[in-house]
Image (spheres, rainbow, N blue to C red):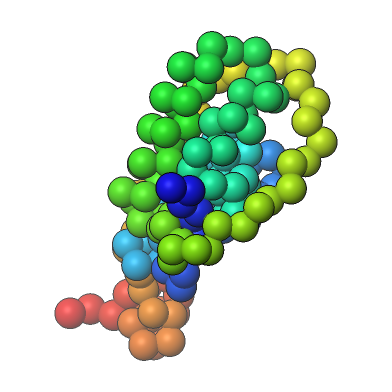
Length: 144
């Protein structure tokens, strides 16, 4: 059975700039970073590539053993699901994402890593209208 993914909206916002994807989970205040292969996997997943096709697409772009690629892709996808960044799309929502230009980059395959940052959670979770100290302003949170 083919399964597609979707962004866990409205809880997740993301942007890819210069090959790095930044994700913010608005429900937890945690932000994440993916680069290289990880950013490619994110892009393919949200474009509608099915779970069974993700590793295959990555394998066509890099010189690496298929078992290593499949394990790395599967691990990253599982982590994205566990962190609440991706969700499975409803049944029947698999789209057939068209393959992009399949050229092998000069670099070798490096297993993707989801970088997780929790140092800004307090500020990410503050409601800037209701939870900010009126005298001190942003980013000072109201006491108690």
